[in-house]
Image 1 (spheres, rainbow, N blue to C red):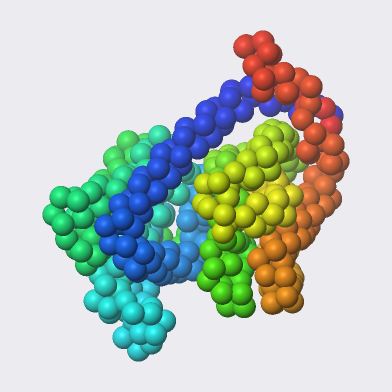
Image 2 (cartoon, rainbow, N blue to C red):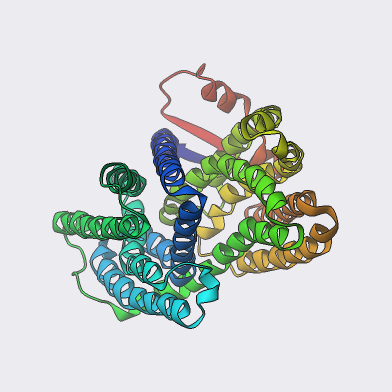
Length: 449
C-alpha cells in the first residue's frame, strides 16, 4: 500500500523547527546574560535566592496547569473554529486557578518559611503574584502553536528572557537597586506579556470567519481537562526523572558533588533542546492530521535519530573540555556526561516518536509507561547514589531513558505495524536531501509500507 505525503508538509515543518530552535538559542543567551549580571552584582546569595523564586513559580505552573496547555493544542489543532470558547475558558482558568496557586505558594511561605530557606516572605509574595499572568502566557503560547502562528509564538516566547535581561541591566547596573526591585520588575514584565498575549489572540479572533463565539463553553472545558489531566502524568513524571536526581545527589553526597553533576546534566539537557523543539511543533500537526499509521512521525523520527547521533558523538568529544571550562574540580563531569549520553540519545528519539500518541488521543499506556519509569528511576537512584554518587545518578538516568524509549518504541511498532528500520534508519534519499544534494523541487514523496 502506498501513502502519499505532501512535499510541502515536511519542508514547512523543518522551517518551523529551524525558526523555533534559533529562538530557543536566543532565549538561552538572554537567560544566561541575566544570570551573569545578577551573579556578579548580587553575588551567589542573590542569584541563589532568585533561582529559588523562579523554580518555585515554575513548579507551580508545571503542576498547576493540569496539562491544559497541551490539551488546548490538541483540541484546537483538530478544529480551529473552537478558538473563541477555548480562549474564553483559558482566560478564566488562568486567573481563577492561577489565583489559587498564588495563595498556595504564599500560604506555604507564611506557614512553612523553612521551605524557602532564608528568603523573606515579601519576596515570595511578589514573585507569586506573577503566577496567574505566567499561566495565561503559557496557555496562550500553546494556543498560538495550535493556530500555527509559529512566528508570533516565538516572538512572545523570546520576550521573557529579553525582558529579564533588560530588567537586570536597568535595576542593577543603572539604578543600582537590589533583589526586591529586580523581582518586582520581573513580575511586572509577566503582566506586560500577559496583556500582549490577550491583545494578540484578540486579533486572531477578529480575523476568524464562521467560528464559534468568544464565550465560555463548559463541555469543551471538561473535554480539555479530561485530556489534560491524562497528559499531565507524563509531564510531571518527566520532571521527576530529569530533575529529582540532582536533589538526591545533593542529599547523599553533598553540594560539591551535586555541583559537578549539574554541569553534566545541564549539558545533557542542552542536547535535548532540539528534539524538544521538534516535538513541540510535531504535536499539533499530528493532532490535526489523524495519521494513525504514523507515517509523518516516522519520517521526522528518522531525521531526528540521525541528527541526534551526530550531536551526541560531538558532545562526547567535547565533554573532555568541561574541566578546562569549569576548572579541575569538575573533572568527573566528563565521566558523568559520557555515562549520560547513550540515554540522552534514546530519550531524544522517544520524545519525538511519542508525539504520535500525544497527537492521536494519548492512550492510557503512555502515562502508565512513565509511571513505571519513575518508579524504576527513584528506586535505582536511592540504591546507587549513596554508594556511587553522581555516577550512579548518571547511570540511573541512562537506564531510565532507555526504559521509556523501549516501552514507547515497542508500543509504536505494535500500533502502527512499522519495523525498527522503517522508524529509525534514515533512507538514502532522505540523507541526500538532508545533506542538500537532492533535487530542490519535488512534488511528492511516496512511502511504501
